[in-house]
Every structure is written in C-alpha cells, then in structure tokens.
Length: 472
Image (cartoon, rainbow, N blue to C red; front, side, top):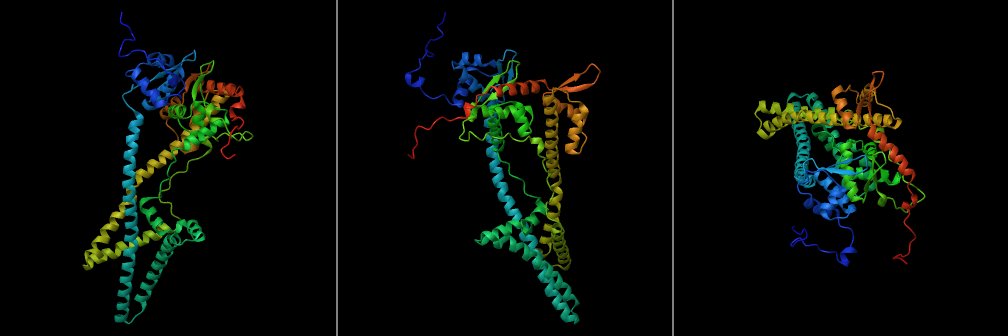
C-alpha cells in the first residue's frame, strides 16, 4: 500500500510561529480550497472541504463563502443543520475577475464618454447661442439698412425687439452660469446653486440630452446593512436584506456571501432548519447607551420616475424658439447662397440636433420601466413579508393589487407567478379550493431570528475598559 504522506507531499508539522500567526486571509483560504476541490462541480459540506484541504473547520467555512462569492455558489441547509455548498458552473467562471475586467472596461468607456459628452454639450451650447447671436446681429444690420432705404422704422423696431429678447435670455443664462462660478464669493455661489435651473447650458443640454443621471453609491447597500446588523444584535437573515435593499433572494445571498467574508461573519442554522447570519464583530461600539435604529423598509420609499427633459416651465419652449430661429435663418441663407458656414452648416446641424431627443426615447422608456419594476418589486416584497409574518398565505389577487398600486399597471399572471417563485413562494391549495402563496422558509427565518435575538448577550457591544492611551 502506498503511503499517503509520501514525498513530495510529505506531512509538514506547523511550527510555533505558524501556530501563533493570525488567521489566514480569506483569499488564501479560497485558493487552498479551490486546489483541493478540483473542478468544484461536486456539492460539499464544510467537513468535506476541511478533510480534503486540511484546513480547520472555521477556515474551511470561511474559504467556502469566499469561493461562493467568486464563483457564484449557492448554499443549502439540511434538516440536521448542515450547510452544503454547490457551484453550478464549478470553478470555471471567476465572476469577480470577470466583473473586474468589465468594471475596468466600463471605467475606460465612462471616461471616454465623459470627454465626448462634455465636448458635445459645450459644442451644443456654443452652436445654438453663437449662431443665434450671429443671425440676430445680421438681422439687425439688415433691418437698419432696410429702414434707411424704405425710410420706415418698422423693420428696425421688429429686429430690435427680437434682438432684445435674445440678449436678455443669453445674458441671464450666461451670467448665472459663469459669473458666480468665477467669483470667490460663497453667497454668490449659493445664489447660483439656488437658481440652478437658470443655467443656460444646463437647460439647453436637458432639452437634447436629457437630465443628468444620478450617480449610484456602490457602498450604500453595505452601510444600510451594517446599520441593520447592529440594530438587530448582530443577527440578520436573508429577509432582512430583502427588506432593507428591496432585492430578490438571489441578490440577497450574493450580498450576504460578500459580507460574511469582509465583516468576519458566519452562518448558523436554527433547530427547524432556518439559516441566519451572525456578525458579532460588527457589534462593539462606544455608543452603548444609544442602540442603532433599524433601517426603514425599502418599500416605504417610492422610486421617482425619470424625467424626459426636467426643465422648468417655459425654458424648453424658449430653447425651442432659439432652435427654430437658427434653422429658419439658415434655411433662408441656403436659398440666398450665403457661405456654407452661415447656411448649410447651421441648417444641417440644427436638423441633426432635432433627431437627438427622438433617439433618447427608447433609453428613457427603459429607465421608466426599471423604476416601475423597482416600485412593483418593493410593493410585492411588502405583501410577502406581511403575509409571512402573520403565518398566512398570500392570495394572488392581493399580490396583483400590490403591484398595481405601486406601478399603476396590471401585471400578467405568468410574470407575477415567476416573481413569487423567485421570492421563495409555494402555491398552496386550501380545503375550500382557494389558492394562495405560502413562504414557509421566510416564516421559519423570521421565527428563528426573533428567538435568537432574544438570547443574545448585549455585552457583545462593549469594548472593555481602556488600559492604554497614546495621548496620556
């Protein structure tokens, strides 16, 4: 029989330095487990991973959670409370590396897009304002000549009124766009910010390119969840993530797997098989007398539908009149045979700009649908969590009513059923023939969390007495 500890895989006993060193980093543990588990297509328990890798049970569990985050793994719990880790694609697709490449590419694209957008926005304002001024001055000069020849001041008066209106719009917009920004005066900057709708370049850009999109904070979800963890004595479930973020169970699992690694958490299983997550390391605080407040549920916040232009009343009309003025004068210039930079260039540029708002329609509709989907998802989550908290089934008509109240649209039965299944629902038929959706896993989890939080010792929040200070 071959010795399993035969060189070059001879057993190496840990040295004293290795025994006393800090716990290995999660990435190191994941690398060791990935080597030990081969292709990763076999479902394993924590004990399996520890036996195959030689890691301690705690390290094996931590490494498995790290692998789940990287390779899109899933966790199952048995009736005995054992965790089973499954990787549908094995270790073939490193989602983190792929996401990192996509993020790097997205940053490059965003940078190039920002430069192109800034150039386009600046050129748009210069084009519309510049040609409006040039054509208005040209009309004024022509009106003066016509008035002298005809010995009639009517043409001059009409051109003067047109020029006055144009100069008033341009001066008011350009003044509030540039002067306070250049002046080192906080009051002027505050006044400018208070009149942000008066920025001419912003109003012009909104007409053609739409309002600026909000920049999402990538750490916002984590801040909310860490507050929720501390408010609930370091113990949360998947349902807490769904409630706080307004996401699906699958999205909640991905976020929890990430937080388990980054915040030194671990998974525990209740007697009836409910999974919950423990983050005792997040509890110590100096504010012992003021516990953190729970985060309000996501369904209390209605996501506003994106605006197509977002300008104040009247601004879009005035900008449209500027565009019309440039287009008509340029068209006349083409008929009169004026140079191309006073005729063909402004005419075809203005006609091309008219197509930009039309081309934005599909993207705007997608954003509106996304906002409606988010509102509908949150309303459906609220109905699901309320029914699970009461231990009742959720009738299909109530789920449809929740979606309709949040979106103003009647959902299709097939789409609604798919969403209820994604949220962990099972169709249940009562003795009287009525049907409803039961969320048994959510009910078990909520009961388990109530019980486990009552047993938690609040001494976890204490940091202990200070025995040394650098300032003393």
